[in-house]
Image (cartoon, rainbow, N blue to C red; front, side, top):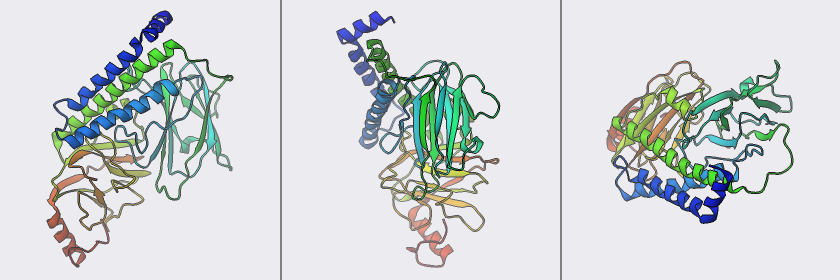
Length: 385
């Protein structure tokens, strides 16, 4: 589309009408046959679209200029996408392969810090996937905690910390993963285009037209992608199989992570028990999500646990208990008013990948089981989960 055609679309209001109509069509994802039929899950679905719209407008309009990149938060407490990790502080920026960038800052003390460059997006056509990746272990970090990384397509001289891009690279994603939020500090980061300067140009009608189209495509594409995933997981209810690493990579996953995704569905008097022996790894966590693959509200409910906070059995195994009511056992995860949803287990840096075992039990039976193993009363808290 030419600049004149885009200007005509803006002048006539066609740009805005097309954007609104595309958002209306995105609502069909929430209404499709594989989606839950109750009003609660539908309400969360439409709220989810509103959240995707908010982040899409930031991504494709407010912070979309790769010549003046801005690190922003694409997922957080009120924007949740694709089993977002409650332990993560996510950041993202628009970049492009024919530019070069410097990412600098101080390391902080956050447990895991990774940087990835990616092509494409959930709403775009064509190739989508990773174009480069480094984590903090590969960087040269000074005694004062400072570091720099060059982002470019061309490999720099030996010894220069480098994050690779490709000609179609379009975004940078930063994952800062807490082990313990109460005592860790995130990295303080700055991203700048080399050879840049000045100020962005005033708004171009073509930029607006293109940005609104991309934002609407992102809302529909993201909702569709993860609805497809959730419906696929629901074919094996209350199981937690290993996820295809190629699919995870295409969805902009971290290459150091092995994912397990599943679907849970429970009655109010039931619990899902997941047993696994975590392998040696840098980090692991388990979390509960709703049907739309949004993490449940971790601000007010214990819906996730990681290697630092989980209670282990004497043999090193871990038992996770998912239930609507507190069964008075360790590693209880609260369904936060939900009857169904998705779930995710992830290892970072594991060399072996044990499959979790799952079983559904009555809450009353679980309490009796724990009381017998603890040698106490049914209401007592066990010493391990």
